[in-house]
Image (tube, rainbow over the protein chains, first blue to last red):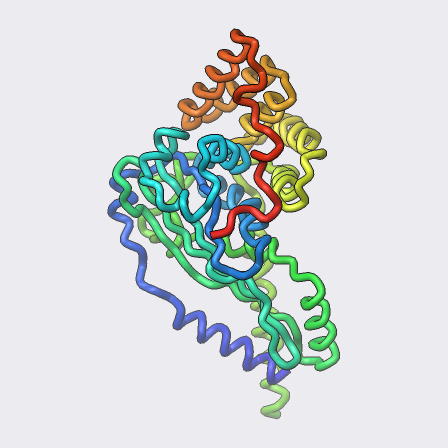
Length: 209
Length: 145
């Protein structure tokens, strides 16, 4: 229990250190997007399924912030129809291309930086880390960005439980709940994205960012 | 005495941690839209490469949203419309693209494009030309770098 207490304290003090200066949202407020198209994600992690698992988890948290989010599956098919298959290439396109194709106010580029399970002696921790960059499709300006790792550690004070949970994590790591949680956190204040037009806080939450 | 206190404090901290996690989850729940199994349907299509339940999942979302008086989330009507289009039901597709456009004017430009395209094919009788082939569907491994 002492150990647990220390871990909790260490984690919370670490969280304190992580707090970064607030985003500059001048460009965001000047161009206030209503709609966002999420294009295929660039995956820098060695886990090959990361991008397809991730893309299923992005629509809901973003739409729940009050934005019109273009359906991701249809977006993929339309891009493919135009020969735009490779995510790295899609991320290099001039943002106004996404206005021409979709009529979207903003485009969200996501890069998966980390998507892995790290093994310690008796415990393991699962890490997902994404970089989010939202750009205005008419000016190409960066409206908002965020990047933070989301870590979940398994293993507890009881050595047997630690071994068992480390073993279970080794068998199948379900990254989906973590990706969902990471997205949810990434869009919330203070570093998140201000509420969109479908959210009751629209134009009333400036003080929180 | 000190040991006992420490134990109590650490338990208290642990409880607070659990409670705040629950609270956070609780806040996330009542949303703006009724999602039903939409995320599961996406997961099946992208990760399991199986679109067999897509129709049922989407229909359930529409019916339940109406029943509970909640809003259908962005993109679901368009998603369903495209599924109908792929199946060859052009009138159905147009109908759902139109629903998306009415519910979410932000989608207007794209929906109008799609409706025009389906209408063109309807008039020219060309079904194959713009119909996505199986190879065009997002694949299991997605796009790498």
